Length: 98
Image 1 (cartoon, one colour):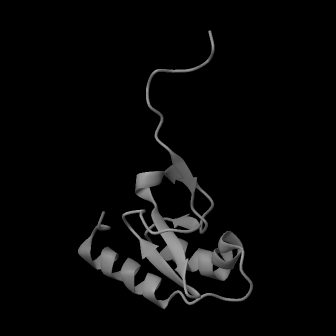
Image 2 (cartoon, helix red, strand yellow):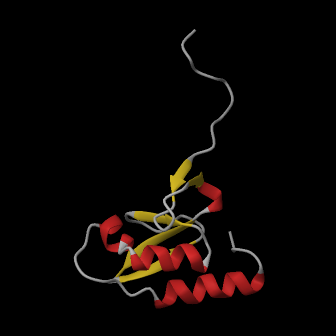
Image 3 (tube, helix red, strand yellow):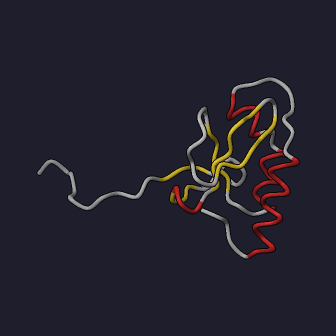
């Protein structure tokens, strides 16, 4: 046997905050636009992306660990205000828009 299965595998990504692996659909894709982190809930914006659980806990961990500059391979801090507003709004709504 070749080891291949006929079932489609769900793509996984690693959260840059808590470093846990999760299904791609369970994580929020983040892209860098003009020196700021921007949410990409549909996953269609161009460029390098980073994934994070859509919770304030994982977002705070990622900011504290300086994970976004490392993931985007840039120097210095990035503005995460827009990203924080999006995650807070999603938490209030009880879900992430897809």
